Image (cartoon, rainbow, N blue to C red):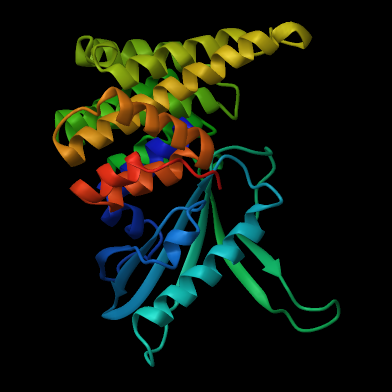
Length: 325
């Protein structure tokens, strides 16, 4: 999902409690113990990480994947990831029972008709009792702005442009709530970035992207265009909106330009993440390595490395030859 995937994963890392509470029955006490990172789960980085929870005092694990659409390969990927995750938890605590695991696919776009509340990957022979896995489907784009607001967190407000009843007036209120509810100016900028990225998905054809940019700019007095990654996203969003529906057979050169714009935006976001972890901007060589790795193995895996590796280990990883997955 490119910039949308990176932006959402980063926000989820910032607000794991808000992510978890949306999928735990209301009224039940939940404690977030941290992200599950292990040598086994690091083998498979295509899906988002899992959270270790305590619900009603009992251990639980929540795995959330953000996906652009509920494609045919999503059940396979969920089943595959659960295998890695289950093995990791067994190795981590030999002889101990593996905590119950819940998987949720957060879907950003797709058909207008309601998606099912659950998905499944069946592995049994035809005619035999079910074996395999079930997972929850949270089609955020089929929810209303009110339903997203009811989740009680600015994390879920960034999905408001996807809501089936999104309007300019509703988004103006969302922008104000993000302004008031963000923990810092940096987080506020990242929330606005996610909001604008979601507006480019536009599954219902609301076409509110330009109005949303003006709302945020008015509220923040030019903050967005002064923030490099968000400025890139605004420019990219504007270009996508203008080109959508116009480009057909002769558009290949322009599409390559769009991909280059996406790569530049992703590189800037990853560079900012590097700076936050190391305390300085990446050198030209380190920046080149980040871009090459994002192109070769995917920006999600590079983001994971930037979050997981410490200081010298991260510098050594960037200095190693890039290996394609």
